[in-house]
Length: 262
Image (cartoon, rainbow, N blue to C red; front, side):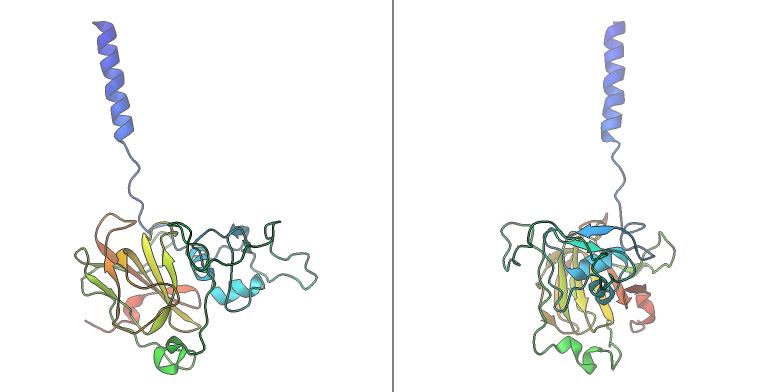
């Protein structure tokens, strides 16, 4: 009987331990970072773009491109190493960002599997997102609300605070572009964001739409303000919501200071 009781206690303890999962990790304290990461390197993985890497480490994509001598249209390849050093490499080449010893493969236009390869950022001859009316460097961006729900979490400048706003809604509620722009990232590779879209509105302004269920646009697509780009979901989080961010020169800003008053 004693051995049986001991075995039962062991099973109960084991069962509690197995069921004690780590809590769901939301965007708090994960992505993005409050301060820029200025040391080390990042190895490019399939599906990443220079924009998503810059977003992850708190960089302005143009500054990151200059630091790594990556010219427009910012083509990167899986296996390439992106330097996160703050200063640009010297002309001597001694501090140039490291890359893999093997020659970089050619960019793949279509994914061979579910994980999309890193894609070049295409720069078409005519880009609606870069006109003055769409918020280029010669004019402000005209913002609109990306979803119709209530704001349930607000922006925080604290290290572990939310770097955008959370908007509630029902599953599959429409998510729309907050301004004219172009899709520069579509994927789920950034921790805490789930299915994520990043739009470029001008050289200085980007916006992000996280936790989507379905994404209705692809990288390189030009979109208009108010156009549906996704359906609201709960990917990467614990409830149905849209996490919305605006970044100016790579830095998160409070969307409520730019969105029209409700």
